[in-house]
Image (cartoon, rainbow, N blue to C red; front, side):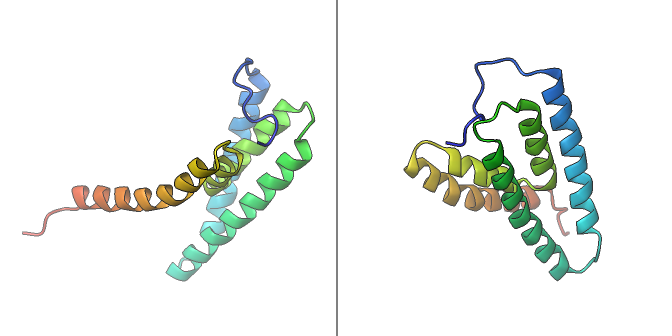
Length: 131
């Protein structure tokens, strides 16, 4: 498990919450900027793919660098930035840091399958009926 991510036994500081908030806002703005560079279906898919891969690389590098260091505010900022920039990085992080190998495999496979089914159901339920 990557050290320092599961510190639920201690109170978080205001600085950590501010770091997550600012990081999330910056990440979301960066994601929006990349997403709006071009407006073609192919670009939207490629930019999402690129953002997800780059976000995972940045999270892995940052958390690897911070491992073993007491840097809760920096860790919170990285978490916020990554989650604002790409939610896939959190998905990958949770799979990598989970203690049970089989649970991680089920999580990795089941999440996108069930998420796609849920999206299809949501779209079907809210789609206006054609009369």
